[in-house]
Image (cartoon, rainbow, N blue to C red; front, side, top):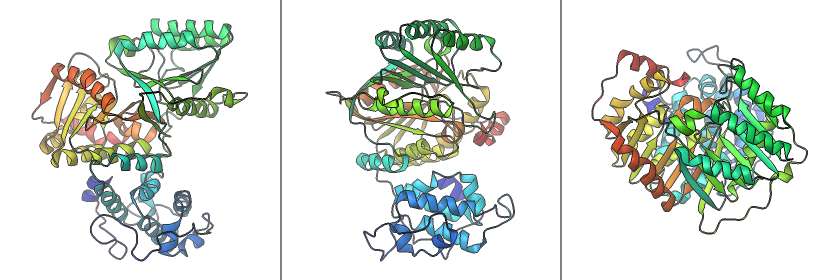
Length: 509
């Protein structure tokens, strides 16, 4: 994205179309408040005929629909993967549409909602678009947290869920809270998880769910086909059959092996009123052996967790009689924290990536990141930019990574991060699987999304986002301050040949 892509792009900018230097801004002379243009967003000719002011006045939905129409009319250009098609009018309209975006949210609502490869393949000089993206990102105002909230809502389709009670749970502290919530459930239990292990913990959950189903509770379990190894692991097949035989519904999320969007979200919703989400799957690795994190949420944000489950459940072939019964009235929690639930659909949008890049540029004082799989060039660029402008950047990554190639890929970025002034730590005791970011001791994000290309591009992911100094301080003390003494800081690092090779594979890991 932005800086790295712009710096390395070989095509240059489109001089005739490029905006003046400095932060991107609305076109000069355009009316401030035009009504949305009446345009056939499915017609290339109608789009190309729009004036700059009409493009700028289009709604976000219209602008994105227009971009998708133009991309459908294009074929890859020579040098970008194929033979150019669609004519110069189509290409020019794509550039004009991006340039007409009146602000960063309007621009990113297009940029992050189409596939980047397809966008680059549709124009002869993709560097012009990348430079616009870089300008919009660089125009972020550090410390503008209200502005970040508005940006997240505009780009990701999320919204503030008001005040919620959030219990940030680390390692085995999850089990008592989850068991109590499961025991208290009287109407419905919905679980969406990437990996369910058929070990002692997995079977204990299965027996509890079966008992609940026999007692009349609606129990629905959705696991990812590849994440849980449904095809190759007879014990998982046996566990799912056991649940179905006891009145629970159990489905698998299907996707193509390599290009599909795996359901990597971790969500549990009980009676529509209590929710859990975070980085943990279900099994001994996550609740016992590894270092991991999950959160319990009560309040209006639980409805958004329910949205995630029902969306994926329906897409996987499941059905419900009346979804309204799963949405009880949810009141804000007195003394709670402002919470958003942000999720994206793999290969359809990059909502969480857009959120993180903007948040890193909003940082003024500190960025603390704990991630097991860290391999995305745009994220590295944003963290390096923050470190260079004086933000304290701390990265805590596992030294004992369960995926060796993921560790090697992360290490390929160490020299760049260290040179920029970031503090790079490797946590020593065991595999650390939590995905947590805290910025300025105020803004925090935690959930299923790693900071690698597969999570930020391919998978279905979900994160909770909280703007509250109290919770951010708690996370800082209980997670980062506890883990740093158990970590080794790397003041220099020379990547091995395998590190460098893995680094080149980051877009596909």
